[in-house]
Image (cartoon, rainbow, N blue to C red):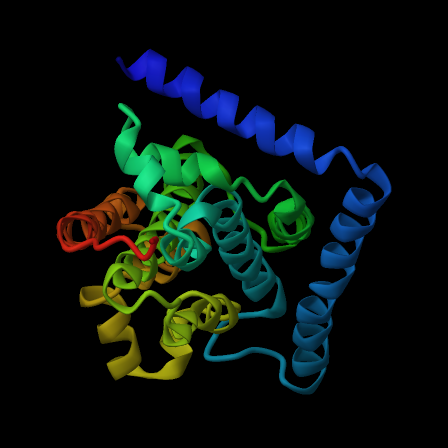
Length: 263
């Protein structure tokens, strides 16, 4: 059953990619534009650290590494969870009726309905920042630190995807996409350029126990940079996956309350 679901999702991706590649010049220019647009993020960091040698003990190389990780998390989530991000349109046009009638998992169908391959531009920018951070941050790499990085990227991607699922679930009740959810997605992408401790203890507390951004960014980053030596920090990002439980429950509640907007 799992293999069948994987093949089906792979087929969805193939359809979306072939559709995007119908206009190759537009596709390439979009990727190039997104890559260049996010260069402003790196430039802002450079200008700030020309003025200040460090921010609460974090150097520019540490921050670039942190920023690269968050950029990759966000870009990966936008690519594969785009169906949730655009779900309001699916509800308004009553396209969700067709999803309900098909004998396939609803979440899988929503995920497969949109695969934003053009977001690879942002992903490339995140990778470049990550590589630069690898080379300049002076990290002593070993198996546990590589595992930490993998956990951060995976759990962060799933956390952003969960937030997109919440946004989609609320559309069952509002029929509109709620812009305030951008505070938790785009907002954290911007705040996540820096280790979360620089914003104060209260903000860090919220990002640890309510929306667990810090579990996928701040605490494991300390382990990567050698500021903490606790081995269990390598596995802390996996705790953030528990956030998907309320996301899934809210989705189930929304589906049960769904009323078609069609005629």
